[in-house]
Amino acid sequence: MAKTKKRFKFPSAYTVILIVLLAVMVLTYFIPAGKYANITYNPDHQQFVITNPDGKVETEKASQQVLDDLNIKIDLKKFEEGVITKPVAIPDTYQALNREKKGAFGALKTFLNAPVQGLMDSIDIVTFVLILGGIVGVVNETGAFTAGMASLSKKLKGKEAGLIIITLALIAIGGSTFGLAEETIAFYPILVPIFISAGYDALVAIATIYLGSCIGTMASTVNPFSVVIASNTAGINFTDGMGIRILMLVLGTAICIFYTVRYAEKVKKNPESSLIYDQKEEIEQHFLHGSEEKEVPAFDLRKKLMLIIFALGFVVMIYGVKELGWMFTEISSLFLLITFILAFISGLGEETFVNEFTRGASDLLGVALVISLARGVTIIMDDGLISDTLMYWLSNGVAHMSGVVFSSMMFFIYILLGFFIQSSSGLAVLSMPIMAPLADVVGVDRSLIVSAYNWGQGIISFIAPTGLVLASLAMVNITFDKWLKFVTPLLITISILALILLGVQVFI
Image (cartoon, rainbow, N blue to C red; front, side, top):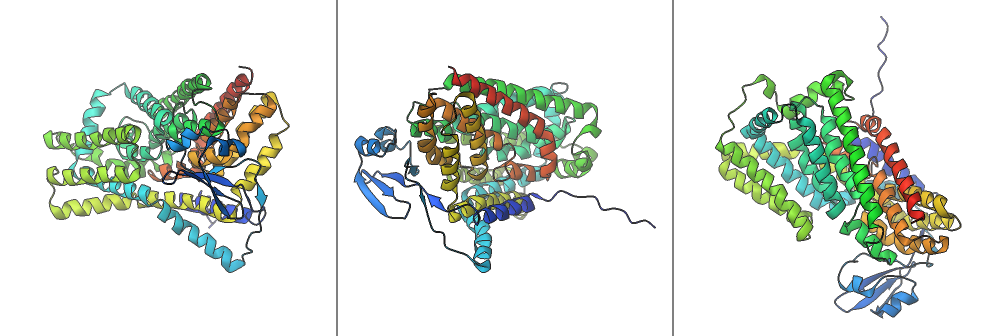
């Protein structure tokens, strides 16, 4: 009897990130160590703290003159008002450093320590994810989601595409204005079952939420975590270049909506055209809990109240992030409060409530681990001192280019930097003092550098394993290769749009 040939199965999110961790670890043996001096502001003593590449620390009384002498074109008020809090790289201070040589044991120790340290550094996000999973488990047990989905499906009959358009557009606006990104993980347990019930696949939900977040943060207009910090560290007002960024937001969002709706309607007409058709039964069983085979529970007052409280949690979360500057500690506390409220109104006994909360949290434990592993990539780069070296090489490489060639290369440079440095604010304060002055040499406006930074680091977030994409895919157990197959044509289209708009910005 002939042996059945084993079909290649793409590795899980954990394996993909571990491969990236290993690759970055190898790079630290080939890319020389180096560092720029950096400057931070100490508000308690109204001093600048300057850390040299060799680790030597100096202090200076905070003044505009100190910044001017260091060729840092940032208004002192930006430091004093707390707009810029992270260390800012000082131009023309790059210095090659001797890196401690590590043997096999040292390399293994660094490799193993990175995920552990990543978990410690990401504990606020991990806590939020686990609490969210627990709440979803409880709400599922009461049948509130099933009853609510049945009711919504009846009302949306024939209008499901409208939900895609509205949701993607609103998330894009949130990403563009206040950096809505990690928080969108909370939306998957709600929208995936709704889209599946509407005849779409789980990939439509991933696309609606994740593409909305990506295009929004990529086309940031007033996002304080990216464009505002980047503009300030570039020495310009964040309103400079606003028109072209708004155009990118409108056109990019429209393209993402068209692309997602077209795929969704294609799947609805022919389920076998779904890129994840082989997982259809498994995903539906997980998210619908076999509800299609059971009598739908009555959508009574208790269930309505639970869903209203759950939904209000997101409204309060968005307000807190946008208006009150909440971080994940405050967001987790909010959802913990919702947990206590649901405990009283769910109608579940204490033991059942705790068991379902624990089971729900365990369902999202994999997502939490993916987030922790991805953070480990940055830790290995920082340990190897290669981030600043990459910046130094790339800035020297484009220093003698001009016009459209310069704008295009800046876009691709920020794609590369964005892959390794996923923190938008971290990338801004590291790169802008180095890259922005190049605009003066080339003869273009510094806002072009901010646009290239926004769009380059934004476009790579669509697929970078070091970002949120693997955590998002892990929510529904979709492998990375299927996402790549889905998103690659869109990625190329948005990239071409970005290059065209950067070319236009050269001449305006």
